[in-house]
Amino acid sequence: MNMTKRELSPEQREELLQTLKARFEKNMSRHPGLEWADVQAKLEANPEKLWSLHEMEETGGEPDVVGHDGKTGEYLFYDCSAESPKGRRSVCYDREALESRKEHKPKNSAVEMAAAMGIELLTEEQYRELQQLGNFDMKTSSWVITPERIRKLGGALFCDRRYDTVFVYHNGAESYYAARGFRGWLRV
Image (cartoon, rainbow, N blue to C red; front, top):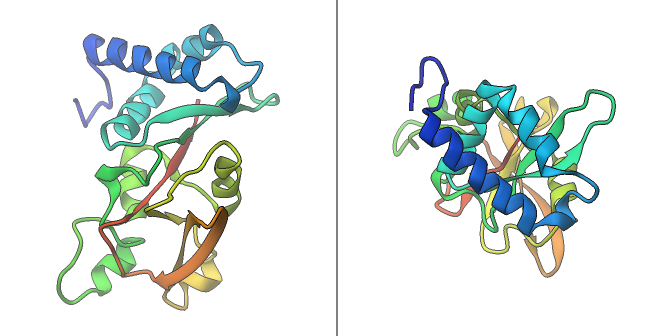
């Protein structure tokens, strides 16, 4: 992986496209009326977005198409792994939270990891949309974009699904747990 240019090798590109196609075809209920050939054409025209999808895949996100923006022609990809992506857990919310910890600091923060991957954290609304497509985070939880007024007071929001209900919780932004990561999304 070439981190500076954000480019995939031809082999990585082909392997990722095959993985995404198989997931797309297996989960047609997530994107009714959409055709893989159209999605693939858009991906091939945007190699930097393909790199971001590769990062999502490599960290366990299992990205899939969940919608299409008719105005812009862009496809929306969300992390669709059953649980919060394994390679993105044990992180606090953002850089400020990371720096505020005096000891036992996590290796990274959700906001910074997402930015480095070229993706964004899901909002609470997007998280609830995702939950309409299946049951996600039945054992884990995921940080979501936190409103500035809450963040200024030191808090951050995360979500999960328990008892067939989507819950939104709060925690100190500096907290981190082995079962909490983050889900991202990308427009292509």
